[in-house]
Length: 115
Length: 114
Image (cartoon, rainbow over the protein chains, first blue to last red):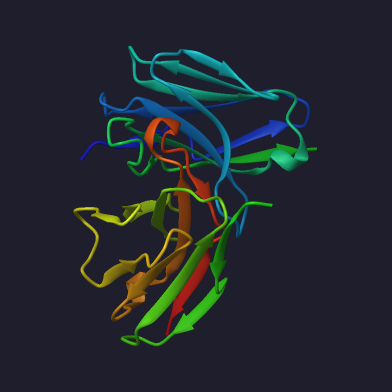
């Protein structure tokens, strides 16, 4: 079946540097994308979302970019901090299911912050 | 604070012994979801309720069932747990409709099957 996948399972960055986490999706019907952060032993925590009619959205220290042509999604974290260490998941879904369709998650990237 | 609560946080059961996991929410969201997350894997959707309408994923085993007696509560029943059912079970909610399927997740229940 169609799936959402990530390019790298682990990403190590220096504290203070910017991080970029990438995600490829294959379901062209998906029109809503979300990034989640999951710390060990906890549930996923919402970071930022983007709809398919946009190509960029910014939050506090985070930016999500969507390239529908190549079905690519990225999460940029500015000035990475130790508290950013976690596994990051991209997820996709469709709004057409009454706004209630569940999420299909990518495999996850473990972000490690080096001091 | 409005939130999604899961009880218990840790559950140990024996092979084949039925177990029920509980989820409650104070967000008053229309949609409630159950996900299964195995070690070092991504969450996988099992099913969801939109109000009282139940929606099962095609590949969710019959061993898994769910109940939603009211807006606030949703239960996951595993009729005959096998060793392969050991996982973190995540409950999530969303407003649904035009507000979209952005999921608010609970802390999860970690299930161990002996």
